Amino acid sequence: MSLSKFKKGDMVKVLSGKDKGKTGKVLRTMPEKDRIIIEKVNLIKKHQRPDQKSKGGVLEKESSIHVSNVGLMCNKCNTAVRIKSKKLEDGKKVRICAKCGDAINVG
Image (cartoon, rainbow, N blue to C red; front, side, top):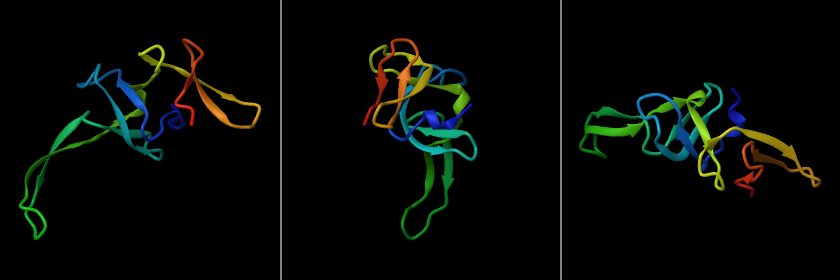
């Protein structure tokens, strides 16, 4: 599974696991581990010790999820789809929805 199909800011849908069906925006990618962090998905509780800046307590934060458990959302199809890559005449590489053939997040 290649991580290059996910970029920061993409909308993705969780395909398996405890958060199956949830959608969210990619906050961070970790290519060396094939994992991504999605906004408000796969929340964990972290116990924070108080220090001079914060008073501590139990915080909820996003944990990483493996890229094989998520699919990229197509704007036109409004579902999680497989993608193809295509090189344009000017040399740019774009991601194409395998279902409808529309370009995903060009820009």
